[in-house]
Length: 256
Image (tube, rainbow, N blue to C red; front, side, top):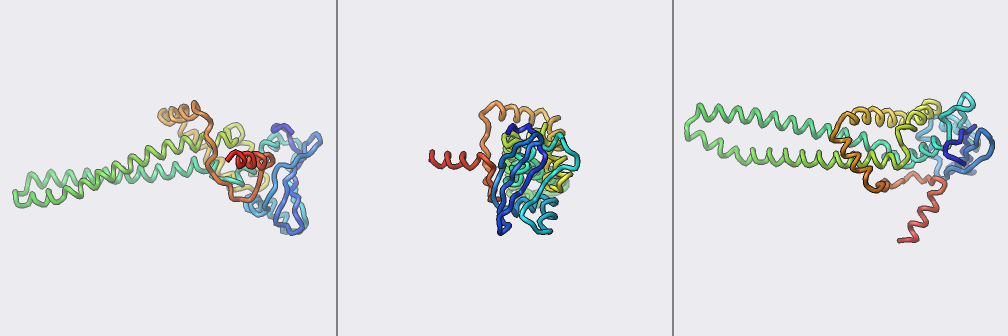
């Protein structure tokens, strides 16, 4: 089935214990395909619609948009949703790193203000105090050096995080979370109650728009895209396998 195929509905077929499932998609024009299989619980955590349905009993959960032929309800949208359930970090890490960078920038600014105050007090002491009091200034040198070292550590860490953030963005694209598909994922989230996915998508778009005005960051992204596509480092622990990935995983193990 082509990834652009519009779907009529998606079906979670549960096992008798209702702990595992197979996710099957049904094309609007006919035909079906198994998209994923594995533990049910991760899907329930991410989908309010699924959680509401399973609370009523039964051995199946159906996802069907309120209007038929919804342009956003495609195989590609379901694939990206499953990838998010499996490894949310693939979409969220880009924004998480930004928060770390902002914390470091605040620490750097705070450290700079402290140094400026210290320099002002030091200049006053030179003008007003005698040689005997200058020993206090000498004693303060180790403290001053420690602040300089801290500043360097913070600045180095920021550089590392900026590179890691560019890599996280590139990996999100490799995982399928291109900007052209984000709106479809938001529509999916609004319809079926995938609140975490919705928040991740909105944060991703907003941060990209902000970063898009940063020339240095855009150069970093261009450098990343010029290289070979980065492999995904995130280890999925959800117990869900996307159709096709099980074969890829077994082939990679055979090569080891």
